[in-house]
Each structure stands twice: as C-alpha cells, then as structure tokens.
Length: 241
Image 1 (cartoon, rainbow, N blue to C red):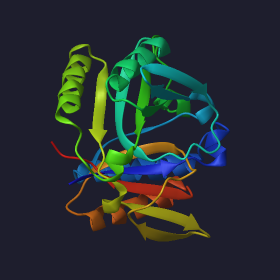
Image 2 (image 1 turned 45 degrees about the vertical axis):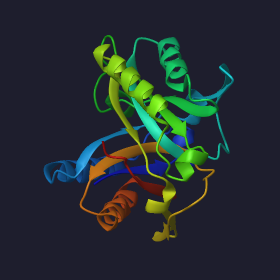
Image 3 (image 1 turned 60 degrees about the vertical axis):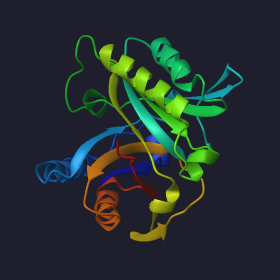
C-alpha cells in the first residue's frame, strides 16, 4: 500500500527561512533509512505560497490568483509533478489537465531543490519543476471513481507528458475516510481518524511511502513529524492502478 504523507506550511517556511541544519540532517537520516528499508518512494518540498498560484476553471475559463495564501482550505484529490522550461509551459499543461473536468481547482507551485537549501551549488541551467495539486470535489469526497471518458482522457494526457519528458510523478488519492490527520502541540501528537474536513494549513511538502498498512503509515508519519517540526500532517492512501 502506498500513502502520501503531507506536512503543512509553518510561518517560518512561508517566510522562506532555511531549515535548521540539524533538522535537515535529521530528515535526511530518516529518508535514507526509509529508502534502505524500501519504505520511502519519493518526496518533494514546495516553496512559499507567495510563489504559488491558484487556478480555478469554470466553463472552460481559467482564473489565476497569485499567492501568498493565508486560508486556501486545501484538501487534495491528486498531484502531478512537472519538469518544464518555463512557468508558462506549466500553466499550459495545467489547462490541459483541467480540460473536460468541469469545475476544477488547481494549485501550482515551484519545488524546493537541493541548491535552494544550500546543499549544493546551483547548476548552470537548473531545471524548473512545479507541483500541480488538484483539489477534491464531491466525487472525490465520496471516493467515487472518475467517469470512464475523463479517466481515459487523463491517461492519454499522462502518456503524452511522459513522452515529452515533462512528467516526473503523478497520483490520485482516496477520500479522507481512509486517511488520518496528525496535529502537534507542545511536542505531542494527536491522531485524528478520517474522514476529516479541509484544513486552512497549506501543504509545504510530501513523502510517498510504501508500507503494509494504514497503521504503519501513521507510525512513519509520526516519526516524520518529529524531525520536520510542523504543526499538522495529513496521511492519505494513494489509488493503485
């Protein structure tokens, strides 16, 4: 079973402050151990919401709202990680991802790279990577599968993204009924079983893990939360092909 463990934005992250070196080392150690144990699959961090945009599609029209966002009420249904030449190219792919889906809302944000954290010098021509986050709608909340025509169109588009060398990763999430939310206060964590409602805390980053059960995913997320030092984490199961 695969799960997406999403840690939420803090004031320090929103200000663009670099993590403490000890925190970076602790996170790296956990991910390295999890990689060796074949638990950690992939993961990314996002830059502050001031560098993100909200894309709202209605009747074929796109409305763009530039961040920062203080209360976006984010609850995800899926994600796509893109590697592109420009933000305009990323926006163009977002238009195609939203086409035919009716009312849909996306968030587009640039990914944190190792050189952003001072872990290595930036390359001469650094890649531009953007994470597209798709908001949950009523069908997603009910865990209803996508309509066959829309599902087929999405698969065709993902194949085109792969062929163009743009697609880095993608996934769809089950509804929150099978998930959990972890809240930290005073150094202690409280686990809230799904279903749960939207959260005003926006996503700062995520890890995809492969574990045998939901309980194992929550256990890993608790360890993750201790090293990333955030206030809230969501654990959501990925839809398997």
